[in-house]
Amino acid sequence: MNNIALILMDQVRTDMLGTYGHEVVKTPNLDRLAKDGVTFTNAYTPAAVCGPARTSLFTGQMPTNHGLVRNVEKAAVSDPKKENPNIISNLDEYKKLYIGKWHVGGKLLPKDFGFEGHNFDGYGYPGSGVYKNMVFDQGPKLEDRYVKWLEEKGFEIPEVTEAYFGENPHLRVQELSGKLNCPKEATLPYFVVEEAKKQILEAKKENKPFFIWMNFWGPHTPCVIPEPYYSMYSKDEVILDESFNNPLKDRPLYHKYISQMWGVWDAPEEKWKEVISKFWGYITLIDDALGDFFEFLKEEGLYSNSFIAVTADHGDAMGAHRLIEKGEFMLDKIYNIPMIVKDPNSLRKNEKDDSLIYLHDLTPTCCEIAGKEIPEFFDGKSFLSLMENGNYEERRGILAQLAGHFVSFEQRMWRRKDYKLIFNSTDKCELYDLKNDPQEMNNIFYDLKYKEIKKEMLEELYGEMIRLKDPLANWLYRIINYL
Image 1 (spheres, rainbow, N blue to C red):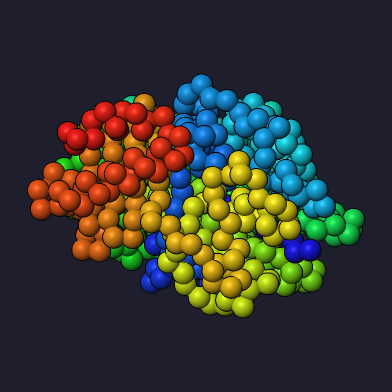
Image 2 (image 1 turned 90 degrees about the vertical axis):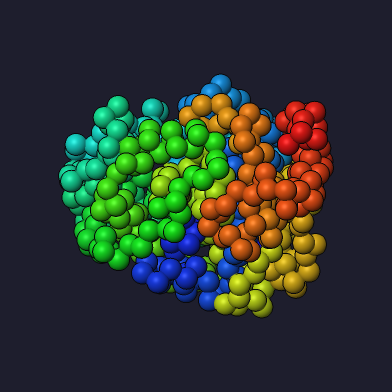
């Protein structure tokens, strides 16, 4: 029976990974994993905020079906029901391990569902209230294993210096970037890897296969990183997106407010480039930690018989259209996610695949790896056959759902390989010709030349919303002829 390792980065822009072709950022360990498997270029999150996306991966369902359509700290939400199927509910023979960030549901934690390992609640950023001079304050409320780990390892408490918060004087609650004064071995990525190693060795001692879900807190801002990563990439190497100097054309005005809130709309280009260069450094820090993890699996004789998937809950605009982070804007930069998969039973090596894949397709895939019947409860579909024999019924498109991040703002996206339609339920809508406008700079929703494409996309969107019992479908039906 194969081991399963799901590795989830937090908020990474896919095209800023070396393994996806970035010419500056170094990700040699992800590159090596990609050579052992398949790199999916059209993988998408169902929602570009943490809680809904992670709950989709856990439950195998779309956000409106599992009920968490906004982050738990932003709105009243419920937890996944313990009696419902989830990603580990059928893995009886496995040692089920959870390491790192949780951010699923409100009150229930990993151990409530049968995981061993960490029990961080909410966002649970372990550096909050721990790092000297750290302003960001979203730490775990119940327990912080990281503090004890630093003590056990003999590390001094790291200190944050050279912090940058953006230009908004009304928002000084989260560092965008900063220098973390400590060795790399004391950072959160290495904490996650070291804790994963310990738990896997316990599984090996018990002669049990393991399922491990490893969750990093990065490269999500605050991008506070140590040397050599802090100085690894120069701001002079950063080339800003074409959309940076022509931002948010024919889009909801609220999108500009989000950028202004973060204090980056009017930030000098030099500051933008500095933050992006630290984001890149954070990516390489995580890649180095993953290299340590992959080497451990090889040394323990576990790499060859482990199904390994490296992905992310969602992306980050990181300069596209002069936006940062994620939220109520449905750019590919925040919905397209990395998906690098190594399957021990697959002959596919060093291949790229452009099939349309959901993050929560991993849920039934893990079920099938374990030889279990896939519950009808799951909205995702297994792509194990695609990995192992190339058989796969291609999707027409991908649906994404968001009810808001900072405020309520209902959106739906229907993303095909050729066009993308965004239904902003209370504001102007969007349509992009992705083949001719990959940067999504020209909104053609109201261009009469694209009237038939728009009609086709709206009908497909509505059909998929009905199929998935999306509660916003009724509103779309009532106004579809007037859009």
